[in-house]
Each structure stands twice: as structure tokens, then as C-alpha cells.
Image (cartoon, rainbow, N blue to C red; front, side):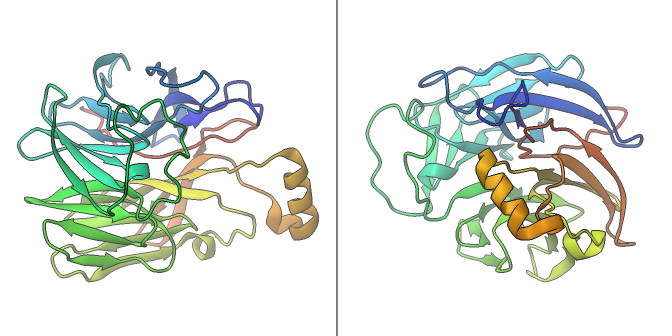
Length: 309
């Protein structure tokens, strides 16, 4: 995730890794993570999506890096980076143990070998990009994004890529499409044979990638009965009937916050940055764990580790 360490809205985001005891709903450790600074010191730096690697380590993406983190010590044990990395949102291990990352701002999916050498690029939307190192360019340098691929996941040998701007998930190779038209999607984790997505307005959808049939469709605004703003819904993991979903409180400059509250009243109040646990079969909220501070915080991923890992 990313946090503003002093809780002030105007300060830049900094990377933070949180370990949560899911059974007790409490934070066990908050570990700041240092990333290599590309560009000026005032830019936001965050930890984006992560996965549990085949070696049991946490493989963690940041905007211009991929980190391998020991889940016991939370130490960074390896780093990968490449001049093509810009606004990297996720990392996974391919069946052949290569790394696959999504670069949302350039509308590309990149494959690297174990040494960090770029060996394949999928371009999901043709566009002109500058030559050279992209890592020091402004976070918004390539907006608007045409498809914004924010997550990739293998189902067998097929790579599925979730596309935020086009509201779908597409297979590579091929052109099979999972439509997610209600709102911009995130995630796309394979759990129990289904791809699980969040949609940023507060929805959870699970789809069978073989039949493309929807298996779960939850509207969390209705499920929680909450009139206040849920936040930016992003980050999901599933363990049996338990679904863990991240919500990021979005903050604007103070004068815009005041105007919003005057305009919307109670409905304009924002809930904190947190992880919500749901029982998806019973369709009920089990608990929530607050992770942010007064300035909120950004959650990109929730990654479950079993107790014996």
C-alpha cells in the first residue's frame, strides 16, 4: 500500500507493507519499504499488487520495481527493474518461472526472465512511447491510458489480463473477453478455479474462465447497508468462504472535502482505508481492519498467507 507518513494530505505517498491477523482483525506489523527513487523526491511511491511466489516469498510490485520479500522478516531479498517499467501495477510468476508484470500507463504486459532481462512484450493498445528509460517520467506522463492493464493471471498456459479502462478481462493469446461493464475492474485472482475481481465502486465478481459464466456477484454498498462512501475498492484474496477486500479512502484538497460534505451531507462522509472480510456464501460482512491514517492510504492488493507458510 501507500501512506502519507505524517497523515497530511499534501505529502507524497510512501510504500508500506502491513501484516494483518485475519482471525483477530488487527495489524501485526507495519513495515516501511524502501524503493529506488526515479525522478524527483516529491513523487508518490507505493507498493502495488503482490502475489505469493512459487518459492513461498512475497513478490511485490512497485511503480518502477519488483521486489522479493521474506514474509517472516519482511526484508527485501531481491529486486528487479527495467527501463520499460512505468506505473507497474502487478507481478506474477509464469509457469516457466519467468516474471510477468503489468505496466498500466504504457498499456503493456511485460515478461522478464529470472535475471530481469525483458524477453517479451504484449502491447494491448498501440501507442507511441519515447525511447530510453521511462522510470523517471512523471506518473501521469502517458494519460489517458487506453486500456490500463492492472492485473495478470495465468489459467493453465493462458494469460488473462484485467483492463481497467475497457472494463473487461482479456485472454492472451486469443481474444476471449470477460465483460465487467458495471464499473472499472481490478484484480482477477484465480482462486478455486474462478477469477475473482473487484470493481472500484464496491463490487466483487467471480467468473469461471472456461465457461465465462458469473459465479459470484456482490454489491458491497447494498450488502453493508452503508450510506457513506465506501472508498476505492481494490485488492482481493479468497480462502474458502472468506473473501478479503481492500478499500482505499480517497482524499482531496481540504476545500473540496468541505464542499463535498456540504453538498452530500452524511452520504459524503468517507470510511477509512481498511480491509473488509466477507463470507461470500452467506453474503455477510465478518469484520474490518483499519490500515490507513487521517490522510487515508492506498491499498492495491491483499495477499493471504496460511498460518503454516
